[in-house]
Image 1 (cartoon, rainbow, N blue to C red):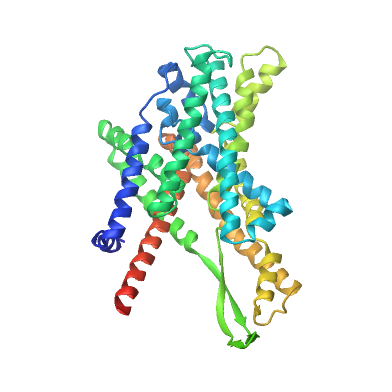
Image 2: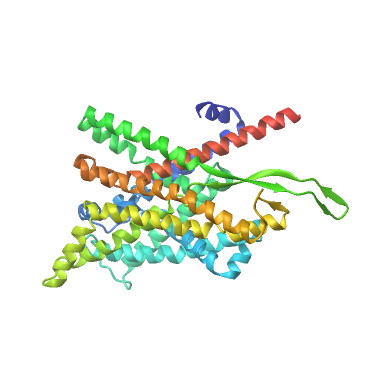
Length: 425
């Protein structure tokens, strides 16, 4: 990995791309420290400590919520818009047809995703400000008729759209996926604070245990993320016009974890939503208050029910999202149209059923992997309370490792292309 980085810096064009990414990430970190006025910082910190769902949003925004900066929403509106568009593409025929049109279709779907991100950012900004006002965090009046509220909503929306634009600049002119890099930078930015906390209260035993867990987690994540089932595909000789194309053999790679980190986001959002709503009624009298307190206690991040439900929901959403992203019928049809077939399997419906069985089986490993990654940190926090602050560590490690691995793959591919160009010359 380090050799690839050194070789990349020796190539002038790759060096410019890497420095360009670093410059964009520096701009992002500067924006994360530009505050939006009108918030009581002490009340905001107390509110975020009590809300696990906003802790997840703060993770993706790189501490933007803690500072209530202009990028407090992070790229969450864009992520939500992307998820919605992916789900809509699976059920709306016109979007399915557009997706099959190659580069043009992908460009149009990305354009629709950007358009959808704007109202999503407006809604999330309004909802976030409404929650802050309900918890006595805002120092300014919350009213859509007031200039302060309108300014805050527009500022938060503009900050989120700016991050989306910066992410696309990284994708276009840098290395890797821009939005993933923005999230990666937000997660990594927490490292100095954690290091400072350790220096203030050094605990060698805890550091060694944490190091062992971190190394083991990274190794397992890389092993599973890179794991794939290769389905052999044979292509028969075919004639098109006056030209004859000889057959060949290749393989169809099916990844063990095709859903990425999306099932964890789905699971934690749905799991924390009831307790978040119930927390608003804990001060009520009678059965309503008792029921709200029970929901908060049962589904709180420090309960065993929370850990169990987190694991089960993550496993379930892994299957759900994989079913949307991988279509055995479309894959079998594409193989048939291109003259390909799986040895020993008849084209058409038998190929579709075979691919569906294989995906279902390998998704078991992917779903259990994501479930363990999601539920292990809160489980460790229950067993060892001193590690309770790692509740979102599994998701963060998964994102960081995935971004680093994918970026290194792209760097190595770019270096390989340059080696071939030099050989040809």
